[in-house]
Image (cartoon, rainbow, N blue to C red; front, side, top):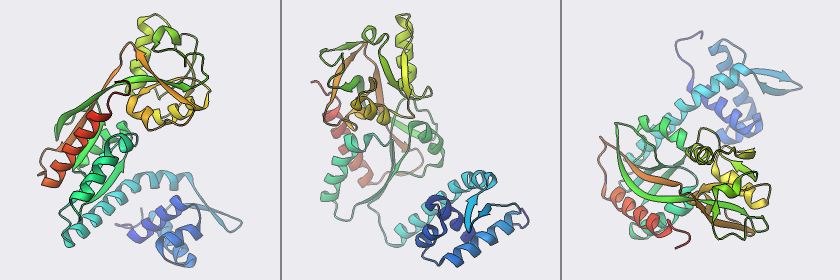
Length: 304
């Protein structure tokens, strides 16, 4: 890098371009003209000392170096956004603001009702919801940039207070004309040879399901592999296979024509609430946590 520092406006222009995909979109996001954004990007390119774009027929195409550079700086820009938001909240005395870290599939199951209730109870209550996968949540725990988090076990972090929330069982998700849809309960032995839609091998659900197959000395017939359970359940509801999923995940994905059945052997998934250990909890955070507990308990059993 040629200089000792990189111009922040140039980095923000790079983010706007990478997220928007064009100079026009970037200009709109930054409330600037296209020539202004173009000059910011050119200045950033000069500062970093390597090409960020190839220019093809008046279009800017990000180079591989630009993509690698952006993957690093976007986290720094996110942290800066958080700092700006925090400064604004402190300036405006938003003591009833809560920052929530959670997986996307629990928004409907665990957060929608508590947020609605707290919004009625506390007129100036506001919240920022950061939705991330469980694996990403583990990476972000060290930043402590939240007041309360929700995740699936296992989670270990010495800087966090981990409190049990609720346990849910895995369920079988499929289209209503699937050969197993008429079963009252779907057993692991029923899935031998059946096309499955599975999560990434890095997920707890996938690892637990494969362990269940090993116990019956069989191999799962994985037809489609998806990054998360939400996509697996949505595909299962359309018919190309069956998904075994966390009930809260399935609940967020159910559409007309989708059926959910109990799955055996029981695969239990434990949810927890997480709080930064060295951060004082406000009464608003405590009240939201209590409402989340109530919501979790009321929605944990789809068949009872």
